[in-house]
Length: 262
Image (cartoon, rainbow, N blue to C red; front, side, top):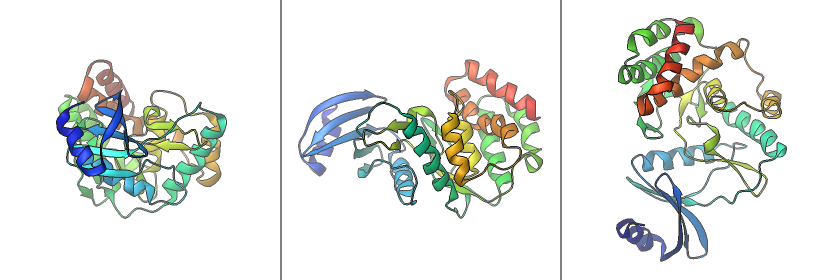
């Protein structure tokens, strides 16, 4: 651990001990009688704000409590984990549906980061304006602007009905923790106002969404007609993020999805 940030945490919370590297610039530490996670890097204040927003929605998946937030440092409570169960999956479906059932006043806004990738947090007047701006900005950075612009020109016909919901915004399986308390927890959000289908599509990008989870979600929020056809459309955003960060196969996958909807 770096003495500089360890001293900052100790000054605010008391002496820390039993530090364990978790990867990704994060450590598990003990401070007083609490197990905490210390995370370094840009976007700490945005992440803290996102966690607080998610925590404020009744029935939504629980998130770690923000203990300390500074521009490059975030301290949250540690979530004790257990084996993943079907009960976890079912609960995640119900809880995500509760999160997405809470109305949100604006398209966009929220975090300036998704993982290590910067995004524009500007509020947009409509869903078309928001998704067009976000997709094109990322496409420019991975040289797919011409192809993606053909998709954004059709967004008025492609997007579903409905107003914005508060989204986790970076909902892949690595950001879901299977709590030892039997509840599914969420970490590392990139919150903004958008379509609930965006969160669900991202969840299915790298591994299937279990039928039990999808069924529980649909009990509270039945999917809009045509949602299955829109899954790849909403996966274009995280694929472009990965293309910006890593290039290679992610850029090829993003291009293939864009051609499908161009």
